[in-house]
Image 1 (cartoon, rainbow, N blue to C red):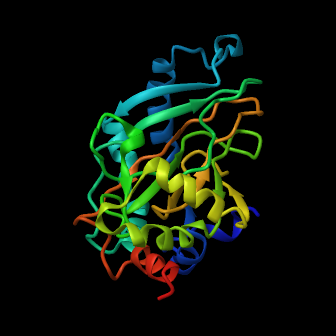
Image 2 (spheres, one colour):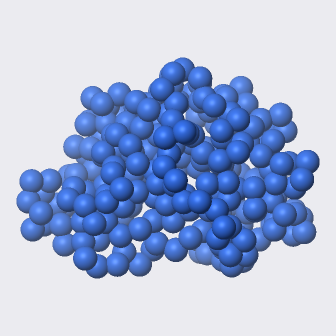
Length: 261
């Protein structure tokens, strides 16, 4: 399965496709000149030379949080804020202060070691410093959307994120019995991954400046990079304005559908 039917090139967003598949792509969501401004900062911080593949010695270089002005602007462009409104509800989300961390993936014969299927956790557990203890509940407390910002052109050989289309509908029945306590990152992965194995796989390919807006419960995974140019992608959350996504939003509608409503 490709992502073609989930592409949005206009000012609106196909909320029906989002509820059904768990993601939509907004093309040219970030202007190319703003992408290039951010890339100059990111390349500098990798310690690698963009013109010398001999310096690309690791399959993944993880860069820390980025909240400089170009990143703040990139996270809140008019096309994106309109899309946020369409999926999380008007006023149902918090403006982002930047684009967070970046797992920069380089062409490499080595395995990256972080390519397992999973659902992103949304709020801290007993030890906030331990990401594996972070949790997810059926209301999606703390997360309205998962965002995938492509800041390089990404083809199918360039380590695009793998997406199990429709897998967000398999997750609510797993989370509902856990109630407000929710499940930890590892607990949910252990159940959601086998529950969604029947789903078709799509790939988060596209051009630099495209952004994927994903349901918080979408099962997804990284993969090795077998292309020729490094892949730059941020994957920050969009936080809800309240404790959880608005009840009348497509995000919440998809949760209800997963529960049979």
